[in-house]
Image 1 (cartoon, one colour):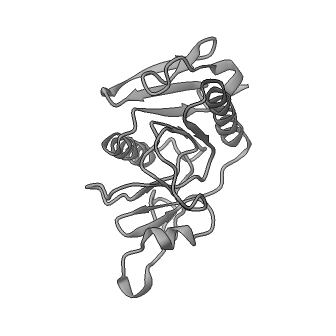
Image 2 (cartoon, rainbow, N blue to C red):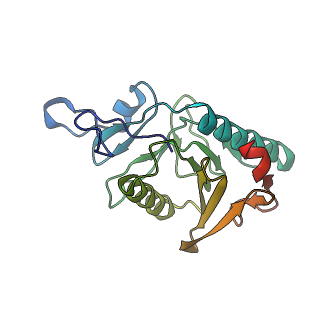
Length: 202
């Protein structure tokens, strides 16, 4: 999960681009925003770039997901910075941009636009700033939003400790932890898909 950009204080875990004359930002505004961003509460939340290790792990998750999609001929794998537009949630969230994801719904008529609906699986890979209490709270809130939007499984990928906490919509407060020497799964979102934790963290 990329660190949210801060424009006011480096201790503030969330910041937003100001909208014109106080007007809430829209998905069209988000489409015109450079870099990785999400729309929450009418504000465009931008994310900082990440380093080598989180990026490499996210890429490998996407690579494995894409191989799975090709194998079964169903669903689409997406890498970092893909936008998913959703109906507004109680939190105010209107979009997601996971580090890696898998989607099985209909594609937009205009393939240059955001995907309509939440992915069934999302992976959020921690950056070096994602280990504070404030960051933990942001991650927990985002997982709750994923599940409200219809995502079945969310991975919290920890490159420092070399493990993956797998959260499932059916039991969102009790993740299963996958560690080195194990294969991680995303059941029930992706039946049959398995990936080596050692390979992801290598």
